[in-house]
Image (cartoon, rainbow, N blue to C red; front, side, top):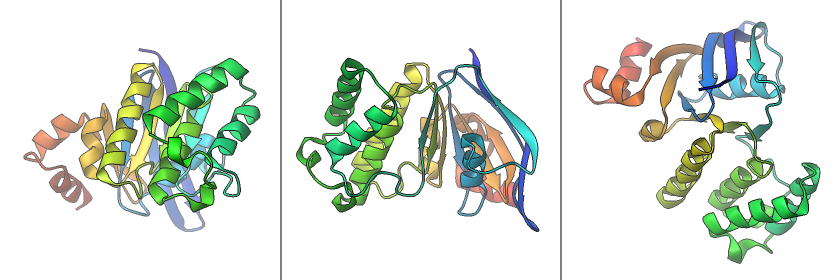
Amino acid sequence: MDRILTISSLSKNFGSLVAVRDFSLILEKGEVIGIFGANGAGKTTLIRMIIGLTKPTSGEFTIATGCRIGYMSQSFSLVGTLTVMENFEFYGALYNLPQQEFIHQRDRFINHFKMEEYLNVRTDRLPAGRKQLLAFSISRLHSPTLLLLDEPTSGLDLLNRKRLWEAVRDAANEGIAILVSTHYLDEAFNCDNIVMMERGAIKAYGNPINLAAKAGGDLINLFLEEGR
């Protein structure tokens, strides 16, 4: 496998608050790594450092040469006054996608997430779950090599969570390296490896099945044990 992202002893302080502490990780092509932790554990700060929105206090990270990055933020990041179709067109132009590639990618996600009836609806009037599915689609529109997803299933019902994770696994099967943060522990088994964070630090790392076996079949118990 090819290394896409290497994080070495990355830390971020906000004054006396340590948001991320000595974080190291390797993400390979086609791999899905889940970052799990409670609110305030440092998940979003970690992703914001990688995307370049926050400067690390110490440590470093490297991204493979020529890597295209896709990013889905935790907060609403689409153009609310534009319709679903207009958002696709806006971001397709922003990414400077050739027309044929844009149409292929756009229609692919419209069909997968059953967006047909929402195409002419303003994005700020969409149900919360539909906004998330659109934001995920936009993050993949330009065929990124590295995909950073910050709480992508927040606000989704079980059916749409399933659809989104199917799309995440499809992306991994295409060779995209994916780093995804979430607080839903049941989603751990959709990942190849997981990181459990507490107060900015890694408390556990590994294959979710192996980690669950270590905790007697319960990842919640593992998280509680590691947090003591």
